[in-house]
Length: 417
Image (cartoon, rainbow, N blue to C red; front, side, top):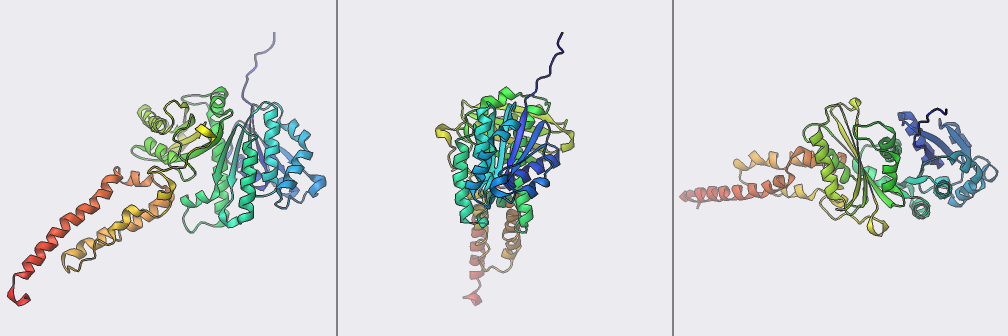
């Protein structure tokens, strides 16, 4: 009698090019579970530094192991020349992630080739790529756009993370090294947010078929990550995820949503319910929401929420126009600026009392909070930010009559006339 077999989804992560291989190295470093890692590059030296399970040195005859020279055509041909080797290492996979940093040569040109092979083998194929920083130059930006369009045609779902958005969650002293490290971390989060739903036993468990129902043939997707501690932590983390600077557009209208909530053993049922309801309200009314909850005591009192939204009408999400839109979050913070003109009048005694408290104090607090958690920290610091904004006019309306009364009292003495 044959022994019973334990069937598990076979998940493979392919990092192609310098950015993709760096991301794979980061995933290995943090111990991403339940996946097989494959590093593909034309740069033989970079491959030596990788701890991936499988390493493919493509384009050996074409580049002699020296890289693609930021030419996507070289990267494409290198991958096509080694299509059989790529097919061999991908065979048997149920899900394949193709991760790359767009804009260079190997990743930009080779990622669509790898994705095409994976999809032809019947694997659910998901692309997770970054768009280059603006400071990397216009040429890389143009190449990245072309590479993203080519990759979108070959995958079931494509998640694009603009590196420039990472600047929205970094302070001004961030180094170039840390900026690129953050890009690797976000690629990791994109892959881990999906694989953990399948591979990690959870309080509310999901399987591969659940994920496939959302992501197969879904087109463009958006990913947001949120985390919070303290009161209302789950709701705040969910709000942070759906208003994340990493989202180029709104999740409004998404027909498929993967929602992952992670927390310690004290994670409450009502917390989960409130966070899930917040995401549900932001998506399409008929959305297929695949939900998973994982208990991880290593998180302490922190709750993490990962939202991946896909299946938009027309294939692409719409640019955000709501209060969580990035344009409002990204740094101007106009809602607090009106405080500054308030202390303008010259009254000597009473005015200084609220000049320091009304002008300098809120301004630094806001500018410090906005870069770290855009649109969301304001909610955390002040449970009702709208009322905070409405208090400013009250200061004027209460202050003006008082100053008028003071002027009237000062006008009474004859010597002042």
